Image 1 (spheres, helix red, strand yellow):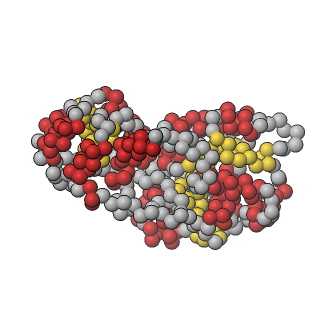
Image 2 (cartoon, rainbow, N blue to C red):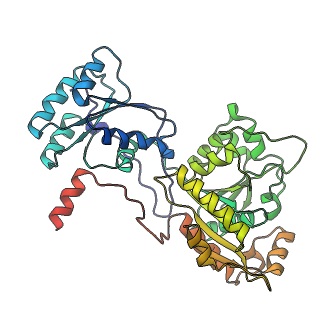
Amino acid sequence: MNFIENEDRGKTPELPAETVSGARLIPRITIQAFCEHSQTAQIIEDTTQDRRMSKVALTTHNGGLDGAVETYRTNPTPNLIIVETTLPADRIEAALGRLAEVCDASTRVIVIGHVNDVMLYRSLIRAGVSEYLVMPATSATIINAIADLFASEGAAPIGRSIGFISAKGGAGASTIAHNIAWAIARSIRQDVLVVDLDLPFGTAGLDFNQDPPQGVADAVFAQDKMDAVMLDRLMSKAANHISLLAAPATLDRTYDLSERSFEQIIELSQKHVPVVILDIPHLWTSWVRHTLAAVDEVVIVAEPDLANLRNAKSIADAVKAMRPTESDPIVVVNKTGIAKRPEIPAPEFAASIECRLAGQIGFDSALFGTAANNGQMIAEVSASHKVNEIFRSVGMQVTGRADVEAGSRSVGLKLPDLFRMRKRA
């Protein structure tokens, strides 16, 4: 067959145990799907809502295997063909042989079938089919299969990106983000990059007592020249295992940024640093929306009052709509226990916005004020303070080391998994 051989499928090198990885973006490829049922076509079209598929050009057609064969008699084949077939097991391989005759050698094929037969699976894989999935399959199952084929080939592990945003101005997302970055660096001894996306008013430089001559603005306005070497030159070392892409925090120019202004910077950062902390300002622009849709984890920082509750609910709902196949945002309730101030209890706050409560941080003006004025982290001012354990706990959650609700998203099962489960039963 002309299909690329299964043995050539590269596998991503395993990450060291201490490394935390993020999702792998699927590169710019073209995919054409040929379905026999409208429900299958809808499942495949739903994959485009996943951020990993943001660069993929996907089209769906009717006709199944026969439709694919007729199409490629006169048209070039894409990078990947997905075909659905309802044929019985003894006829599928012969039908695929006709498709192979009109396919380029580099084209890969994923078959979606309705026959749950492990012998058929093995036969198709030996014949050169890239993957065989059994209906009912989910969008997540199909995305994972595509990612295994394309995103993993010879690609180095990429870091995990975590975006912090305040529900309301002054809620403290920057302070929380910076201290969690410190806790991650100290707890798991992984390199952490803090990227301050608040170009006119960012505080990462102040919080880490740094005044680097270059930073994130230089990266944004040098998009055509950005590469790993330039990124490394723009990063400044703030502490052991912690680097910064600090904001200029000047008003000598306006910062009218496009939707994808930070996309390349974030992708480059993830390729070179295990954990990327994004300090996102309290705005709602096209680039903020795009960035929240693209990161691995979204953390909403809020104070326990009604205005914060309303805003946090709006942000959470928007993020969930943008990322239907991803984990929901988590919330950190900050500045609890202010004297004489009525407040919403943190568990009720999280339940109201339908997000998991990652932690709550009590109000301590002396501690946080001293740290801010000295350009220090809380752990540097008071290493034994109980808030440091909260920072550490949240850090472990957002890096995937403490999954409070592991497996909250179903990713579907491939055919061999089904047979293993049956055998155990």
